[in-house]
Length: 329
Image (cartoon, rainbow, N blue to C red; front, side, top):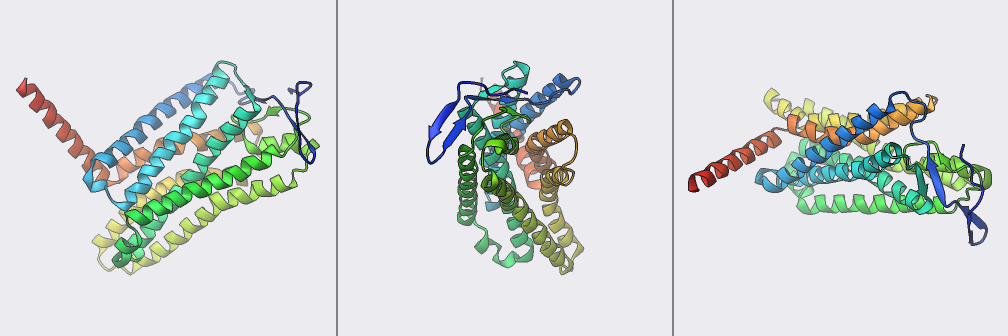
């Protein structure tokens, strides 16, 4: 256990706040063959970058995808890239090159970016759920309720809310004193281990309350909305008389449902089985942070007919241009 013994920065406010010059990210301690896991994370990161970049490029170039729903899909792909970039390169740098010490300010910055993009994953899935709810339950009012303007407003409001919440999160941490251990038992500047480090020398009750309230706001309220929306969608599906139309409606929801399951189920399992060993919990939680961003574009390409058609058209157009260039030369 690394203990803070000297070089403490004292900040005078109403009370003295003890801020350490650095934290030590302990990461994956005692896990055999952990370097293979780092290789796995590197591959996941590369696939995430390539897959989500393709999604964004296809949405920009294919006119058929210039619909309100794909504003949220584009935002989801952008968030996937940002979340993976905020987490994986720093994680690999720390543990492959033994740079596990991180300054106090860098730690808060790392926490800010990793958590805000995780929050945005939840908000993006909620926006997509709203799109499907209106499309199936209120098809005649769809273009009035879901248009480019309303989708930009929803996406912008989600970003503002996520930034506001994470600023409260970080602001509460800056009010804590760290007078003992500076070892964070996680793979990034995880807020919950930070609270436990500050417990011996700070009043962590407000922070503890917020640490439970914020996940409820950004994760579980959206999950409740998504579940409720699909209850309404299922009810609406029974009112569709033609099997062909019902099948088409179900097909439009499939990819979104898979994304929801990939994102929310692992988080729920981790919270339910909170007594699992620390290393197992860290590995599972790290997988919930890196796998959904990698799988999201794969699922959309495989499960969404519009995407497959758009990619084929773009490839065909590119091939025709290449042939035309060769003939002209």
